[in-house]
Image (cartoon, rainbow, N blue to C red; front, side, top):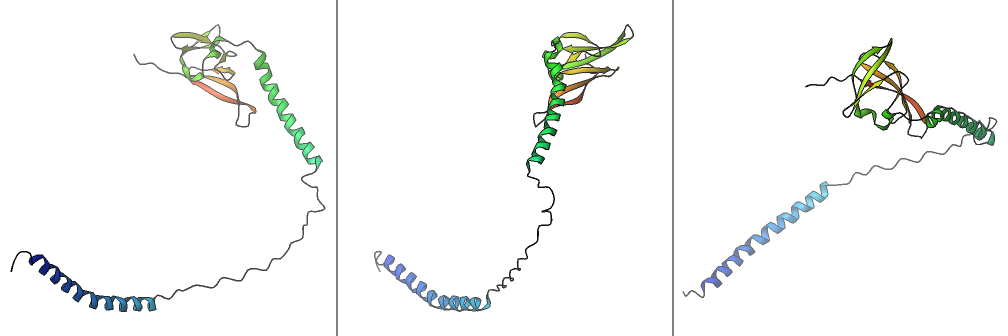
Amino acid sequence: MSKRWLPLLVAVCGLLVLSACADGSDQELSRWMSQERAKAQPKVQPLAEPKQFKPENYLRASELDPFTELKLTQALKREAGKASANSALIAPELSRRKGPLEAFPLDTMAMVGSLVKEGKPVALVTVGKLLYQVRPGDYLGQNYGKVTAITETKVALREIVQDAAGEWIEREANLNLQERSK
């Protein structure tokens, strides 16, 4: 045989092998598929019947309507009372002349010591490289912080800040003694 007949012979043998395999496996596969289809029966549960709607009588018709003008007027008076109390809290702070330590945030300050001068407590506070003497009644920080008490370990403050709703509220803050390592 010559070399030019060899590729043709290989192709014919391959086709014979593939055709022998195709007939048997196709029938077996079809039989398996039909058996599996017969086994797989969907199980759908029926939907429950809808409940009958039963209307309820409104029993509070004789009571005061929550949407009347009277209710709105009462709510506005309550809010006005709160607003006047809050404005009374901040008004004296806005008209007061600010001290030198009110230009700095409280977290940039450090209490480094305390002493008693003329029978009254005095805290030593540093801002940057400057040392300040702070007494009760002085103001610290940018939130209208007024010094209420000084102990050996802390300076207690009353700050006036706005809450999430924009209302002015009081809160307590402390400036604790910090030891510096050398």
